[in-house]
Image (tube, rainbow, N blue to C red; front, side):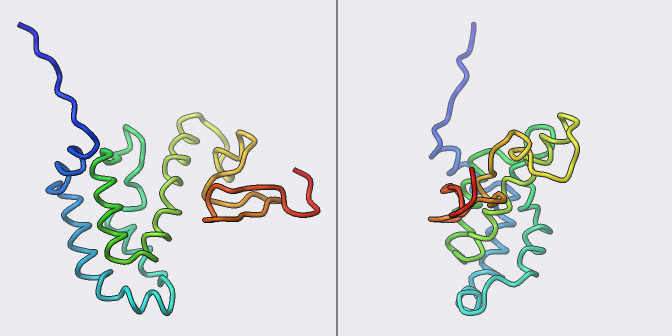
Length: 152
């Protein structure tokens, strides 16, 4: 007798991730640290120590590719929901750090020289960081265009 593998929808994966130990740690941190400080963060900006706290939780490497202990998508989505609900400004800062780990892992795997983003070596800009000679508009992530007076 053969069995058919069960597939889950994205919503089911997110719901199942609620009790994941990593997601539970993120939820605890968000409720204990981020939510109480959210209004102060709105007024003063995201403190540097907040990024260090996210790092200590493992939130700066959660998108690492297979072989580098990355999280499954449902857990990643749940972490996004939790952090955005607790402190939207901190979530915005955090999401700008997300693609870096994958780029670095890809660079190491391909044996590329370090020092520039992987996508810059491909001849294009990173979505999350401006390239030299380009202006950034919109949400500062995906709307790159040549800067006035600078060739593309």
